[in-house]
Amino acid sequence: MADSGGDDCCSPRLPDDALFLGLDCSTQSLKATVLDAGLGVVATDSVHFDSDLPHYGTHGGVRRDPAERGRIVSPPLMWAEALDLLLARLRPRADLRRVAAVSGSAQQHGSVYWARGAGAALAALDPAGGLATQLAGAFAAPESPVWMDSSSAAQCREVEAAMGGPLRLTALTGCRAHERCTGPQIRKMHQTRPQVYDATERVSLVSSFMASLLVGGYACIDETDGAGMNIMDIATRQLREDALQATAPNLEERIGKLAPAHAVAGKISPYFVQSRFQFASSCIVIQWSGDNPNSLAGLTLSNPGDLAISLGTSDTVFGITDSPEPTLEGNIFPNPVDPKTYMVLLCYKNGSLTREDLRNRYAERSWDMFNRLLEETAPLNGGKLGFYYKEHEILPPLPVGFHRYVVKNLTSGSLDEMVEEEVDEFDPPSEVRAIIEGQFLSMRGHAEQCGLPVPPKRIIATGGASSNPTILKIMASIFGCPVYTSQRSDSASLGAALRAAHGWLCNQQDEFVPFSSVYSERIDRTSLSMKLAVPFGEWEGDLELLNNYTLLVRKRLEIEQKLIERFSRRELSGF
Image 1: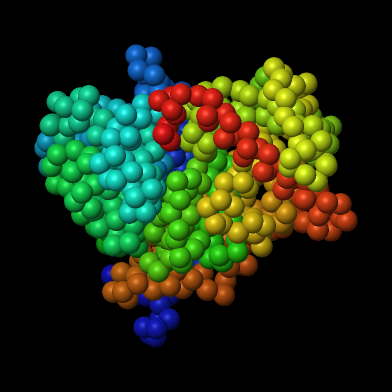
Image 2: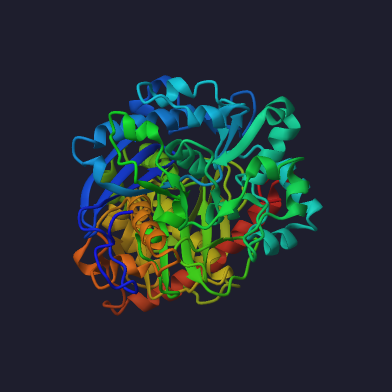
């Protein structure tokens, strides 16, 4: 192992000449961030699945099964080929021989089904060939159900019933059985494609799949990403025998052991050492984890009074707690960089793709026009509330559809006097404001219901839409706090690079060390520094507007419940 760069074992340091590589296998792309020992960004790059690997036939990084409603998958071979392509692009700008550790982030909940013999194939990869060519026959199923899949409603209800109901399952595993969760996905595979399940040697999450490629063998699922499977005990961080039995037979042998997020998954495979990439044989691979936990790491979120909102393909809201209280609305995960605390997560399927759909319909496919329309409309949108579900939504659990209401007596100060009327359509400026206000009103309402602080001390915004100041201004008004942004919108791959450095330090010390050891006293001089994007409370009308938004949040949640009751429970992912 390389020298830590200091003699004091209580003050571990990163080696001066080392690099740390973070990868993020998201829904639509594979991204990379390379940090030096001073946490400066050395290089970044990405591979976009649709445009760079068009032969896989994905749209938005996924395939939609025309024969089965709600079945949404991605080919794991595409992720493997993307890894080769990304490292080839990165190598001219970053000396991969200096990479001391690599870790990664991946879209949560996707399940990969390795065929019998795949472990041996991983161990025997030929550096002269490519990953996709050599692993073409390594999968029992050529496609992986991903987090967007909404075809396992029956299996969700079966798992919940077997575990004593949704509340008990939530208390035990951190969340109820959502269709995106891996346990119900595995159960569905066992029930509907038993030949695939029987031929499966190992089930990986997308995160442990990518780590497996790097170590040349099956990597463990980390405890943080494992919490989204409905089979891990959230208190002990061990697989539950009753949950395994409720999911599929002989599942434990297919899942393998779980590992802490800061643990070493293994040394990097000879494939990456002896090939054109020329990694050092001493390079270690730190456990991969989910994209939201890595974003938490990348934003260095550590204060229970802070909230992070990620505006991406899926929108997420998350914060930290040391006293988790699982609810049917949120998810509880172990904090990937602090074994003593947990992160609370709210996930919305209708994120950037739904915003883009409204932009295309009402703003001439232009974000400049979209922003102009937003600025033309007054806050509160004249009481116009929109519910836009281009995809089967998770929170609230509602099917595809758009619903529009006009709320009367909006500023009466009384919820009882506020009456809604359903309408067919708004004018374009109101449609644009309704999608943005509606998403943030829902986030605030559900965050309050699961115990996250509202108003928070601050919000750290990340994801693609965090670069839009007009959208962030609305976020600040609805939540009633200042909004900060990171220097880099891609917090997941940045978080993965930081976790690589943290895992290296933990391995060097042979024990867990605080995550702050990575960036202690240097945060404002690195890529981690935050900047104030939108203040709050500087204008005397801020608090009055916040009070009106508070009432509108309550009204929106009331209408959400009416919509849920309107639709058949068999149509809904959460019931």
